[in-house]
Image 1: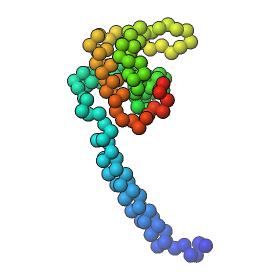
Image 2: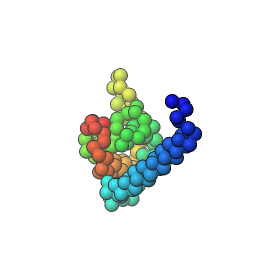
Image 3: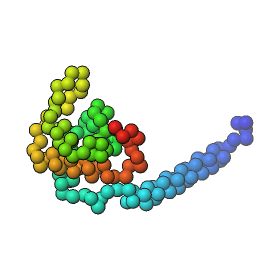
Image 4: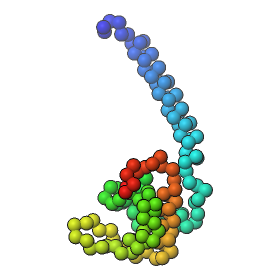
Length: 141
């Protein structure tokens, strides 16, 4: 077998595979660039959503929570929490932390103002409206 497989054959396989996968990469990139504008939610981006994202980042929420599958897995997924619980529940939950329930992980109280809470809820609402192709698969995150 080794006598029939030459260096030129190996080179042709290498270059052929490289060209094939480069073209495949370009095709998938083109497909993604066509699909993303149809799935995003940029029309609903408001100053309140931007301020809510800043609250999310400055308090390092992603250090414990996930958002659309990205982040830490210490606390629940929040990509669909707005649909699951609603704005009033989210605000009340954040304000009541830590609950002191024994045996449960505790979220710190960040002492957010009413404006910060409203902005954070707007950010979570915005995030819940992004077409994520039914992610997370479990409605409870």
